[in-house]
Image 1: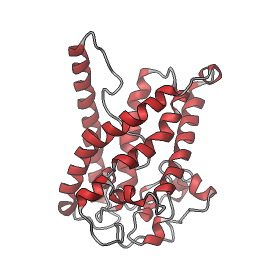
Image 2 (image 1 turned 135 degrees about the horizontal axis):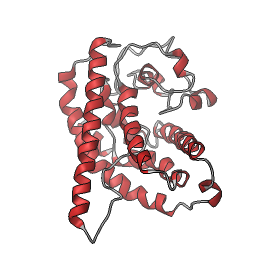
Image 3 (image 1 turned 90 degrees about the horizontal axis):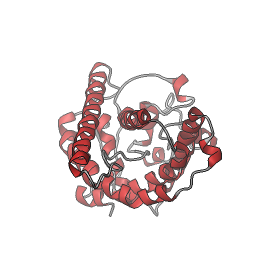
Image 4 (image 1 turned 90 degrees about the vertical axis):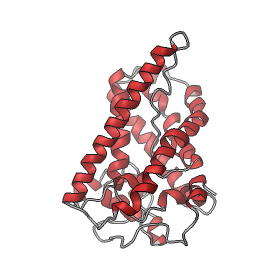
Amino acid sequence: MGHPTYRPGARRVNARHPLDSWEARRVEWFVFWTIYLGLGAACTLAELIRPAHKVRYRKALVMDVIACLVAQFAVFEVAEWVTGPVGDAARQSPIVLATWLPFRIAAYYLAADFGSYWMHRLMHTRYAWRIHRWHHSPEQLYWLAGVRTTVPQQILFNLPYVLALPLLADTPQWFAMAALVENVARNHWMHMNVAWRSNWLERVFVTPRYHHIHHSADAALHDGNYGSLFSIWDRLFGTYIDPGTTTPKKFGTGEPKRDPVLLMLGV
């Protein structure tokens, strides 16, 4: 997971009409979970039709559902509370605001994903691995396996995105919904268990088999394919591992098992 969090209603504050705000938040939560579970159902169907490897869903589902709820109702809340003021303090440039919106959106994703790539590499150093180990703990890799995140990990991953937020100033309302769908779909997509050879797409974008290498239990393969959206950073900075010639045999940290509560806390 190398992208920002989405917390419905986070920036919809209306002190004069608290009931209206509550109703708006309920609608946003309903929309969010409809999209989240709807895309998850589509991913599950694709996994059952054309799986890349065998997955024992029953073995993984309980822990991943717990991790998902903890992430949505605790981790993301805290991470946004910490990083939100950083985005609010970022200054907007008149030159940027005068730039054509599609260029600004493209620049936002390029800048944020570039920062995310380096944050991800930082988490694989001995100084920060403990806060990222929880994300690599699933031994059954499928669309919901990417929800495991700790508070410090999410704070670091949020930073590049909130720093790039001035590029999205004055975007139309539809973009918030589009960003929500992209946010959810990307995390599902990266971890989805599908057998799909996609060499042409991987020249630019991260695909499931591309990211699965990074989740290999082989520690040597952790040090590669750090990209979240674009694969170009791995190619530029020497961390590209070709999914056409490398297939992970097992998933997980490759380390002795640890207490999941401690892993979730990043200690």
